[in-house]
Length: 200
Image (tube, helix red, strand yellow):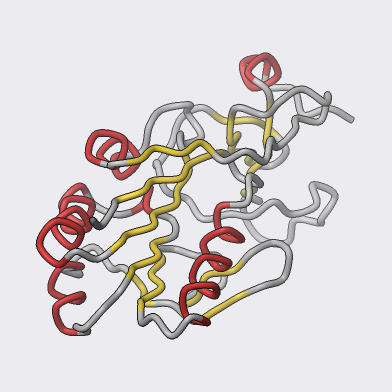
């Protein structure tokens, strides 16, 4: 019986690395599947900070994922990265792929946004997934405590308001600003997130 599995964590918990590993392992056994992503920092591919990457289908907001799966039938699996950015409807389409087509879906996403709140896609996946798997790689705050928050840092200040989706990176905070604001993300424990402290 096919399964909808949702694996989640903070930045740095190995989501994309595991997504790429599962896709590689299944494809190497001559199973046919699709790798999907949304708003990957490198464009139409899934990338890991370890330097591994693979081409992927870009999940635009108007993409019908169930229809995509039907168009690529026969299909054995879908590996879906960055599902926190998928629409609620697209999450439901993933469930339909599992239920109607008996295709396994491996979904990966962030648990909360920079405000510490569930993304719409994450919330829906937690509601409908057959399996909910917290990733075991524990990212760390600068203080050494377990990181629980993906803090948005604008011009070296933690911010708590703004658009839910703003693409940034985990760039070196010492990088020189040339034009406009510098936006990046940093992993913090709950205490230092609430205090807005970034360490040395």
